[in-house]
Image (cartoon, rainbow, N blue to C red; front, side, top):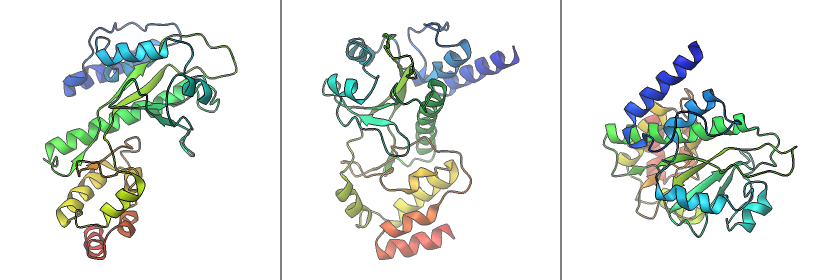
Length: 263
């Protein structure tokens, strides 16, 4: 009972703090037996609204069959770049029928990632994005920084043929930030685009939020509009952020400034 009360308190606070993420159309009762009440209460504040047009588009794609069974089924349904990432094992992909959005998916055939474990990391991604956005808003850092909006999407309850697979109920949907390619991003980090003001804002965000993985420029790439984008939002709340890592990607002048800043 205490756990349930705690979960409901967190739910109420989340909807109060992040009103734009309040749910529309979802019932507080889990929609299927494979999702416990405790799990549903944990994901509820972060779900893509039931009445959102984007959800209707995704339902059409994912209801065909078990699209997220493996890389092959994901590719057959139209998704691009379906190979899981080396370390996280998550698939970061897009679909031509849903332009403007990126999808982060754990596949059913990834037996080492049970639904509970996968969901924990998915929720962290959404929470991290909200935390960064709130910080940017509070400290008026919009000129140089941005973060995509992220939601959890409940996959349709399609049948899965192989019981040894780990059935996943959710994926992450996020705004496409139209980031620069790898080489362009590296050049921009060494260019005059990165100023002392830019680095001071970056230092504050990394240090105050504890963004462990955002000291890698592939996780904070420049977007086409010239802003630094926080696309990897899962690892937040850490004390010992490896800030020295940023130094090597900067121009000589900015390296010197960064060294003084972090010390």
